[in-house]
Length: 402
Image (tube, rainbow, N blue to C red; front, side, top):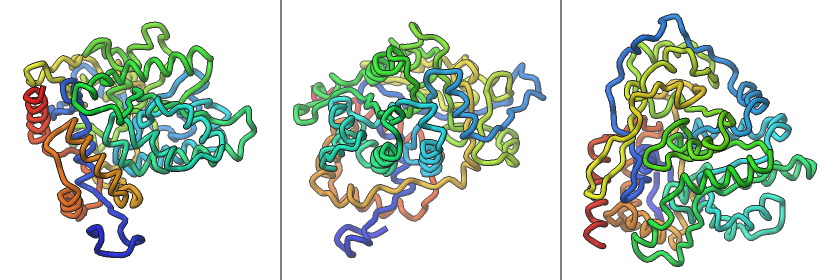
């Protein structure tokens, strides 16, 4: 890690491990928040001990799922480079365009869908215009994502190798926020219904047109049967009218709080692997015993645990993706062109402070980046108590500003 201005441009590629991992957890709502809280994992109750997870080669299994489902949904990178690399391998697979029509993404502002369509189709669009698609979403995480900085150009390049009938379309599913018109937290909160936006895009652009889509979103948007807070997460919303059309995958090496006996069962698995949840010991675990249970904040800025903790994992997701041991995962670096764009970074820091105070200067950002760069491994879980207090503090500050 090097401070900005201390070396030549080619040496200023800021790489962030623990710091970027912390940003992943801090990308949250001010008054409607979904954040994880650690729950102690326990041995599954009432699950046959011989109901093992059966790993299959991941990419062939995911491609085969499109033969039975209209959409296959999985978490995107969120700072995890191993997941980045897997997704790139998946969409580069020669069979992928034969199975899939669309890729719907969390880090895409639907306001810019016309520009995105033209760019992905191969038109000569200035890259500064295209960058608005992922830099200007409701989520600060997206604006500094190395994954999405590469994802859109990659799909564009892939399309140039395909006949017109097989070219991929990328769907921007984030609400159409116009940051030029956002001055207060109330302006921002008009675009808080992200799951409604995602569900609408999938219904109108994929299901109504009988197309097939890969969905790349944080897993809390993708679980089956999650109706809290109303109207629920994106998959639950559109499954009311389109049941059994989505195959949901969760990353086994991400967001899990499994005991040592469980982790040891994966020691000999090949990576990457995919295992079906139904009928397995992990699928039979209750959410609270296997996955950090999300909460929301009420109008008094206090946490409310209204997520269906009693549901088994197999009720919520259909399969688990294994990419190797959690403690060997790598963190995704922030692209150098993002960090060196001081004009954009100034805006990014202002937006981040609007959503989750306190504010931070560019110098403070650089300092935290330097301090967090001594470990390039992806952090499995930060100190959740400090995260919770930061969320509550931000909520209280926003209430004081109203």
